[in-house]
Image (cartoon, rainbow, N blue to C red; front, side):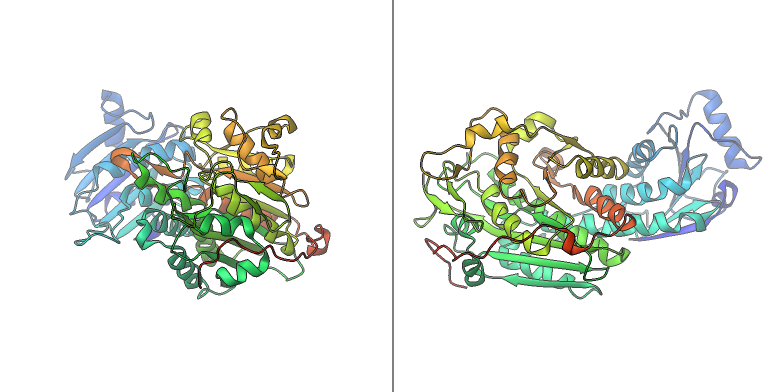
Length: 506
């Protein structure tokens, strides 16, 4: 889909020939003397059109516009949030197979600030997954023109919107793929494909290299699967090498049966979405390739399957993480934290300015926050505030949950340095407390996206979240003073790698 800006007022849009014209009518709409403005005035006066977000008035071949279909839609106060509601409602009624060219005009809306939102909402409303369908029917909508009196002022917002869409749709693509079409190896290939863009580089490590690093916790999760694990290292180099990077760590469990602690069969197919954290990291890097901000970013993806074969890790087994800390695996379905902890330790070598892990980690977070906000945990107030602000600006919100030391008491073990689970109470928090034990030397935040990464039911599919949140955070850091890498803490002392219980042949 191609998005373009046009410097046209409402009267100019009315003369453009297209399959559909959507006019966003905000509370601040000031009518002109043109026919379309007068139509809007009459519709509001009669009560047929309200400015409440999402309220519609549809017309076919209206004399006031050259468009085949005309949709007037209330845009409320013109804020990004209310414009999103308006565009979502309007796009839903113009998604006909015959609509190939669409115009969207701002009538009193805050055009410049809302352009990004319009682009993302149109893309969301017309997205179609096709990869594994025998007769794929993709988007019919090919061209979208965004009309505003001063289009030049909105160019930056258009660029941000289209880059965000590219990232979100890459994340959706890999999250939506069935597990046999999104193995760890395939995920590694997708990451390597991003290295074709300038400033991007990728390295993919296999079982042998991971064993040499001593990632015993990560390997223990993978040992029950015939699919070999992959550890993906992406780098975006937009600033000097001396500048500390932001590190994003995405959970990449490409399918999660629960292992020996096997899940119920109902809706287990949705466990293909257990790599949405990894998909979001890929999406951020895809967007960075277009935007080229002056910052360094590292993406780490520990990718494997969690399967229950004869070699699978058992409840009660003790494994040694890359940090040297030992872990008693009391529940093999709490595997995400076991792959993440080794990736967090690996991240120390980059001396990051901040590290953020993203994971579909706990059902407890879904219970706590539902599908509206992602759970966010951090002991660093500045980092937490920056993520909260990024979520609000991207309309991809998160909510900070506590990390009191008392929540970590349940992770005590008689047989290892820690257990991988505590009790049911506060499950999202105790999972974060587990990860916190591997991040003492770094500013760290954890995003639990179990409730926001995908939808179930008739609308089943990945949402692409939190690509928007992460992208806004990274771009804000690009505008902030750069931090020299030497200001970060020291890396972990080298230790002899623990021998893995089983390593899949590379």
